[in-house]
Amino acid sequence: ALSDRAQLVDARIRAFAGTSVAYLELAAAVLGAGWTVSATPWVGTVPQVLQVVVVVGGLVLTVVLLRRAAPRPPRRWSPEATPA
Image (cartoon, rainbow, N blue to C red; front, top):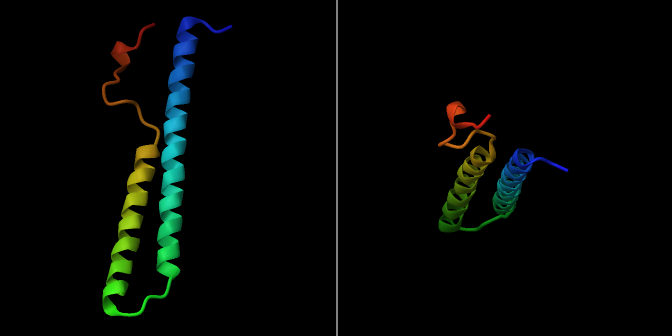
């Protein structure tokens, strides 16, 4: 059996892990979709420009999602506010 504090910490760790994994999965999906779009042959200038925009946008979105998945303390967290 866990103490109340341990249950709180466990719940916070599980919530963080779930969120991080969701961002990592979404980043992988976006990267896979961008890779598929980049490998698809397009004929014409407009489709090729659109392809470049989609691929670069997908790469930028992947970096943003990976940064969101990174472990870091919450913005309002401070060591002084942590109960003993």
